[in-house]
Amino acid sequence: MKESLENLTQSTIGQVLIEALPYIRKFEDKTFVIKYGGAAMKDEVLKDAFAQNITLLRKVGINVVLVHGGGDAITKTAEKLDVSTQFIHGKRVTDKEMISIVQMTLAGKVNQDIVRLISEHGAKAVGVSGLDANTIKAIPCKEAASLGLVGEIIRINTGYLDLLCHARLIPVIAPIGFDDEGNVYNINADDAASAIAIALKAEKLIYVSDVAGVYHGETILKSVCKAEAADLIEDGVISGGMIPKALSAYKTLDGGVKKIHLIDGRLIHSLLLEIFTDQGIGTQFVTERDSDL
Ligand SMILES: Nc1ncnc2c1ncn2[C@@H]1O[C@H](COP(=O)(O)OP(=O)(O)O)[C@@H](O)[C@H]1O
Ligand SMILES: CC(=O)N[C@@H](CCC(=O)OP(=O)(O)O)C(=O)O
Image (cartoon, rainbow, N blue to C red; front, side, top):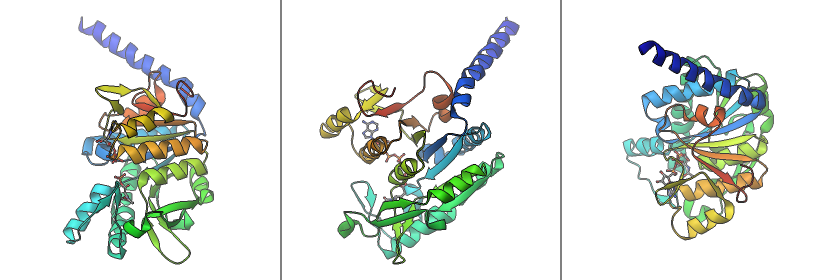
């Protein structure tokens, strides 16, 4: 009995690996932008598994570009320094003192921790702050009067990111931007991932977050089109942090990226399941109902 169960397990494992083959062939040399956030950035086991997943994607020939968040880490650093934090519609009010904290936390600590973890698993990651090689050029966002130094991206230096990808390195990008006047801007990580995916003409943008997908009541929507999302936002079904995520997803679709997924970072190996299995997981954002699935 034990032997047959072992056989069954082996055959299942074999089946899963074989299922991955067409995807590995299809995605070789394609660019995937991954927005890394939520529990997969905090829990030690999930962090480790995520770094393994990223390493595997790179090793099978996918150009992986990571854009990380770190909102909680910024808030914690600010608290330690006795600086209070305020958000307006999900975006942090950022004055001169806060932008130093953002830069220090994202580019100095969060970014380098991710680079180290990926390197431990055998891929080579390069930390990229948006200021490095002029990667993220920004202007003050439309709400600058209330938000301060929060930026809207106007240009991505794709040359530098392409160079890293061609060298089979993994860019790990901290979402801060610069302008010609020497200002540094705090940029929402979902917005940064969107702009980078469009600029790199990515095959996919994947948001790794803390939910199983977009919920409508108890149901996880397998896909959600632009018109439905607008209704769900209007009805308050999509709220809070999901609003900027959904809006940035449709902006990315409009910018030419065809596949945008939201997956559950609390589920171990969710990235591999999404990319390399037939069923996929989470929610796909699509332009029109039943398109692009
Ligand atoms: N309809 C919805 N489906 C799923 N999550 C939703 C929905 N409406 C609001 N949310 C909230 O959006 C959050 C995800 O946004 P956010 O916390 O900003 O993610 P991240 O930190 O990964 O960028 C979820 O944890 C959930 O609380
Ligand atoms: C303007 C703005 O709000 N920037 C974000 C940048 C980090 C981020 O987006 O992190 P998460 O993805 O973890 O939320 C912030 O200061 O928190």
